[in-house]
Image 1 (spheres, rainbow, N blue to C red):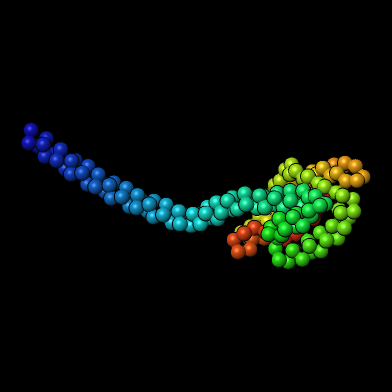
Image 2: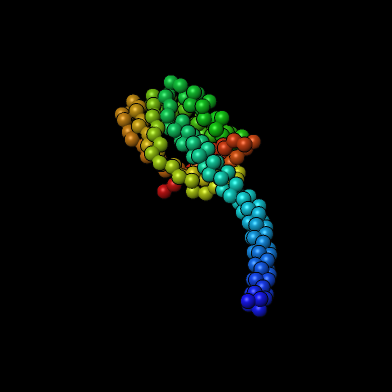
Length: 177
């Protein structure tokens, strides 16, 4: 019986050493995996944060483009200055000059026809966007009433926006065929 007990003792020591070796290997693998996870979190997280920022800005970009489109297409000949003053805060300094020049030219026509217009944004979508510029496609209709009668007008615009001091502003717009 003692020979048998002696024979078993080395197996136990061998299996005990195997368990310690396996535990040490497992601990090293766990530490390496943890380090890899931490490295990945710090390298991937900035990209994820940038994507979150773009998504948050997407709503602001769309709201600004839609508001611009709605305000430009909603006016009354008796109070065209109200439309101009409501649109101006949405514009970059560069675009304000050309917008006011165009608006002043149209003012004469609007007044002479006693034109009123009510705009409605039907759809919009971000065509492109980065951290400080965006292009939004806007589909809008307007019901125009004048001394000549009532007309439905249909607009498909690309509205270009830039971010200035943390605020999205319209820098240009153009019709899309």
